[in-house]
Amino acid sequence: MKPAAVASSHRAAQALALARRVIRSPWLIAALLALVGVGAFSVGRASAPTGFEGQLPPHVGVPAHATLVRREAYLQESAENWYYAVAGSSHAALTAFYRVQLSQDGWTCFRSQVSTDITRDGKAFSGSSVYMTALRGNTRAQISTADQGYGAFLLQDDLPENSIALKISLEATTAPVCV
Image (cartoon, rainbow, N blue to C red; front, top):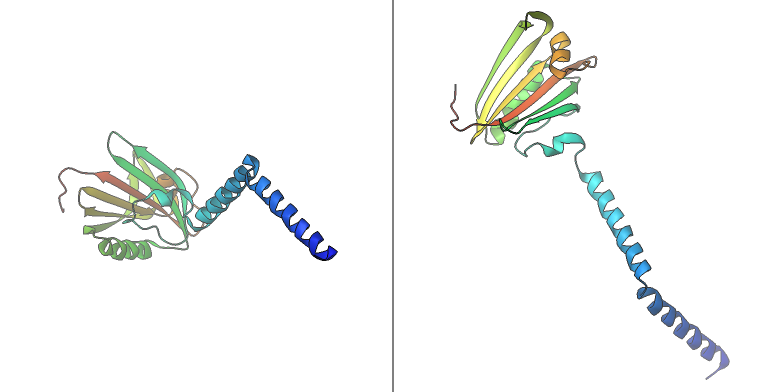
C-alpha cells in the first residue's frame, strides 16, 4: 500500500471508531430525542388551532376573525361556553354562517330570533342581539351574537370597535325537542 492510502485507511478507521463511540453515548441519544421532540412539537403547534377553539367539537365552527375572550365549563350541568369577539362581522353574516355551517355538520332544528331594546336585571343595554339554537343528537347549541353595550355585557369585557360578541354554548340534553 502506498503511504497516502494507508493514512486514508487509518483516518477512515478512526472516524468509524469515533462514530461508534458517539452512537453508544447516552448523551447523544438524549440530545437527538430532544431535538426530534422539539421539532415535532413545533410542527404540531404550527398546524394546530390557537386558543380554546381547538377544544370545540369538530361539528361547531368558529367564524374567521374570531378572537377567544374567555371560556366557561359547568361540569354538573354538562355545559360549556365559549366567548369570542368577531371583528368586522355583523349579526346577519354570523346568522348566515351558522345556518349553513351547522346544517352541513348534521345539526337540525335551527332557529334564530332577533332582539333589540335589551334589558337584563333591570338594566337597559344599547345594541341588538341574535339568539340561535340547534340540535345534534343529545347536544343543544345555543349561539348568541350581540353588539354595542349588550355585546360588552355578554363578553364581560370591552367589545372592540366594529366587532360582534359571540357566545357559543353547548349542553347535553336527555330529551332533545325541536321548538
